[in-house]
Length: 116
Image 1: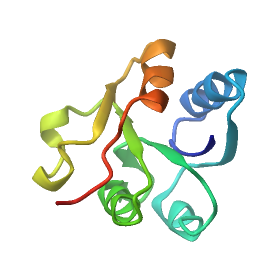
Image 2 (image 1 turned 90 degrees about the horizontal axis):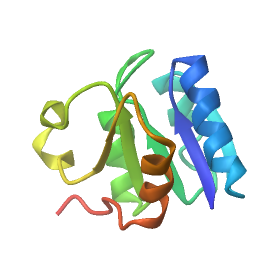
Image 3 (image 1 turned 90 degrees about the vertical axis):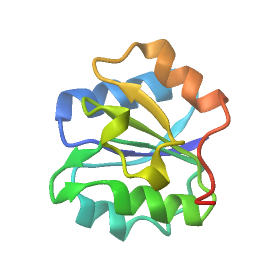
Image 4 (image 1 turned 45 degrees about the horizontal axis):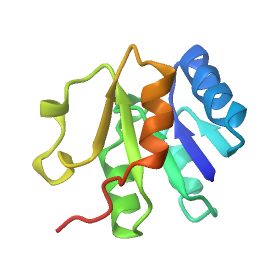
């Protein structure tokens, strides 16, 4: 899979990248801000791992754009699932601190794909 990562903590971003690359996936980019991520939404990727709180605000607009394009994603966040807007509460949610297995499991499970 080709994976986009939105995470503003460089250590966590590096951990996520290592986890997915060690499983043979390709990370197309690791971004730490909303603005930078929006610039890459048209890139070719199959999945995204999104922190909720990043430079520039919350990643809910990114998540909505991914759902509209039918690109599966998971939130990886220290926030709580209840902090998500109602339209995004069906999204996969991995709490921080995370286990490597939770990240890998999210790649193989059906993820949030639709806003309906």
